[in-house]
View 1 (spheres, rainbow, N blue to C red):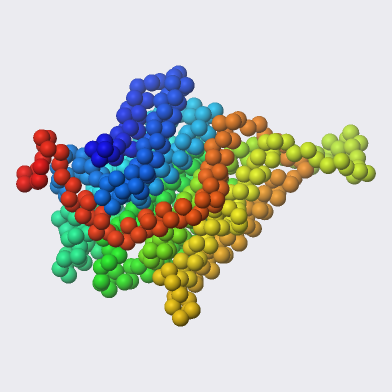
View 2: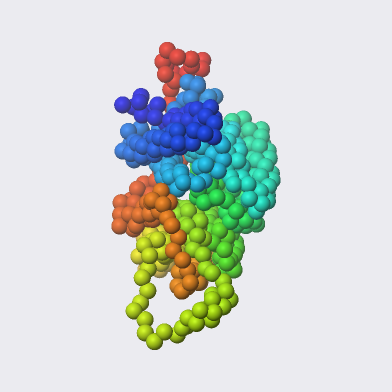
Length: 545
């Protein structure tokens, strides 16, 4: 069984790449066939991700870490793909959101571009590769595949505001890629390796000059990931991009923002978290402070936003700020709570992105025109009695879905946003998991983070409810027409948030196991460095058969 489980690790990359290559062969007149191939491939990715999720948590591999030698060369000389509980979780989240976005695009957006389906699969290959690669060079390769596909998808529809936003998005990400490449070069010059497990081993025994060069390279590399994670002031591009993107593309952009957070969490806890140096001590605090500034920026921006697209963008910035601060905080209980928050906020903001187009279909006639019409036809504006108003099913669905998204983003009970924030508050106030002499052990940064999270929730309540009242309580709003393929993806994402609320205990237990494994990097390192090539195939000289 172990052999077939190892082969399964390759599928999250191989399957979308093959599907993308196949889809390129069909022209724009074969839209139904292209959609069927795309959907089949995405559903197969979902099944694969769930299988990897089960395999890692069941510890079919030692300590729940599976490794695949792509070229059958032993690490760190060859390419290695690694899946553990965290990467399997992110693969599953990616497949769920991708399936929802693809189904939503069926009626309109999948037909707006000739190469939508192939770009969509290339995007999935890049995201999945970033989650399971075991070395920094291939992380750069998958990062570029992901970004190149997103450039094409962001232009879907060729509207003027979309073109302007995409130009800004392309320039910012090209600069981030340059920093990425420079950082990788400096790290290789310092350590002589780009394999993350091998890098963690060598970092512990470096001299002062090599360590300084390594930390400079890591700092430059972090700029690329912090730009993708929308850390202030590097995330100025995000609200404009989210507001201009097509809804299914916007949902995938929400996930792409979490790729930067994932890489920071992986490298931080694997390579740098246990290093006892002065620069390390400063950088942990700096990441927390940067996350808090991002959280404050998102809160102010959300409070001042009037458009749904920008509200979604600033909600994503708030989510990123909270996660970055939690990563910098570094405690196991905090990281576990942050992973719960990551799942909840990503699903909610992705559902919110899909809702934007549906809500914008609600058309309100001009008040002045309505007044003239009523006067011309002598319509009584003050009837003596009213029997009530019948709410169409479409309006009821949109209203309930909008309220659910607002509750989760704001962190209000009873949905998963409240559970996530409550768990995070408990971990911040008591990171050690126990009380000492009945006193809280939280520090000033923890209290500051707690206060900003509460303020961001208050801003979300004010901003989203203000928009909701103006939209759904207006007497002249007209119910839009909704397709099943549009309502179903939003419902599934929100139902998953509800399921997280109902199953908060098992979910938290799994995330506790994930955080515990992250704080024991030796398990990851030993598994990657000990995996052997397949006998009888090409193997590096000196490797064990």
